[in-house]
Length: 207
Image (cartoon, rainbow, N blue to C red; front, top):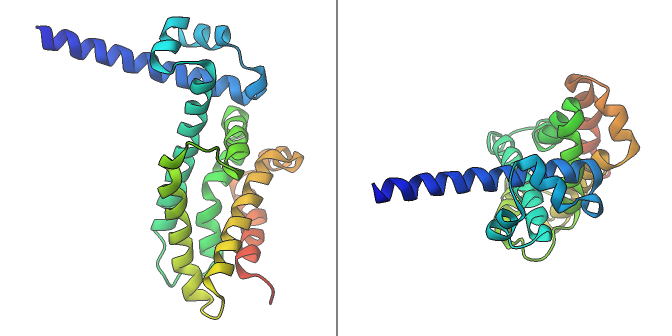
């Protein structure tokens, strides 16, 4: 019985933690880090201030954890898309896989796009202390390099890595810039037709 009570308490604690993360990310998506309040988050999560202190320590740590969690989901989706490619994939196929998570967010619009904008801000320059995600950033580069090296054997690896980083930065910019709102009004197919050739061009470099 004692073990069962511990398990139930642990499950309840995990639900509270997850609710706080979701509420924090929703608030961040709407107003950015400067506009988030502890009261708003706890009310949305149905929790109290003590729960924030217990699970995260502070509002800032909670917000960082929420953004990190969302960024990790984005990287996982990108890794899944890139990992499905054969080495013989074309640059267009690579670009489509690389851009797919962002294209989906742009097409979904609303809260999902708002969350992606929050993620894009930190994706450009992840804060120190997020070393846990370093392996996932590295995996996306490795998977993209596998295809780029096969397609562009004459280009040095350092330059290919630069092109990958430039393509990632461009996708983040699309989420943040006014053009992102224009894209959000389009279908996923239309967004892909517009975005993929640009990303492929970044991979290809000069003719």
